[in-house]
Length: 281
Image 1 (cartoon, rainbow, N blue to C red):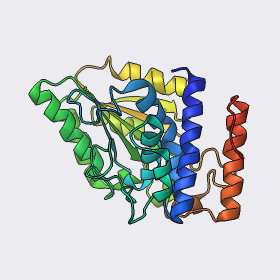
Image 2 (cartoon, rainbow, N blue to C red; image 1 turned 45 degrees about the horizontal axis):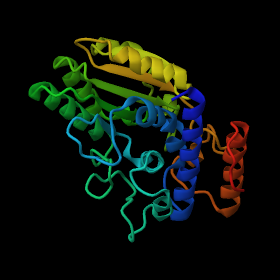
Image 3 (cartoon, rainbow, N blue to C red; image 1 turned 180 degrees about the horizontal axis):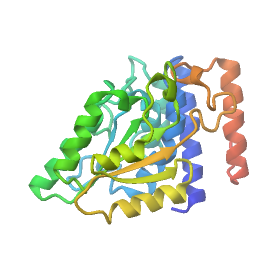
Image 4 (cartoon, rainbow, N blue to C red; image 1 turned 60 degrees about the vertical axis):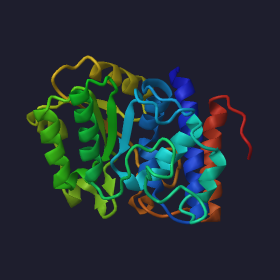
């Protein structure tokens, strides 16, 4: 896909994220909006997946380690055709299948149930290691949060991935600079992430997490790396695309009310119109 086509898909997914969180009256919009561009590139341009056959053996695997940002994964899956987009309006409803965190039992396309921060990357390491041991050629991808990597389990997983030379594993850290308690630099500084991960024997690439060409180029580079896992450190804006949510820690884990939702939809629709897309509202 072209970068413009990917941007359109990402902003369509942003609409679905806001639709779901608003309907549920709860959820995590800020970090969902910051990572959805990477998910869009993965699902629409990079990964070998088939919504008509979600369990095909040779499919690539994806794990959303920062599982509270399930709205981003669900919206991307719905936009890709794994289930109807209308299902997003039943996010977190007991009447439907879209739980507050990714659910591999009930949601087509979800490879690993996540929610407890730090554990998803371990699952991704296990998938990549299993592929190595069984001679499978699929690749495994994961997205972590910059607040999530305060969990020690992440660094244990990083060490294991390097030990086993998992060059079939490519992970992202979504560096939006904010977590539930405030700026990550104040809560628990992690910089310089690139140097730390290089010391853990990862191949590290730094990108603008909202630049589709940079994300695509990083993924292409990751495929050329031998004997090391790859980490793509992406600089992003929390709440990206919604004027009053951008760079605001208050939108880590709450839903917009009706008036705020209307403003958010207007922001996203305006951007889609700039991209030449006809939208309702």
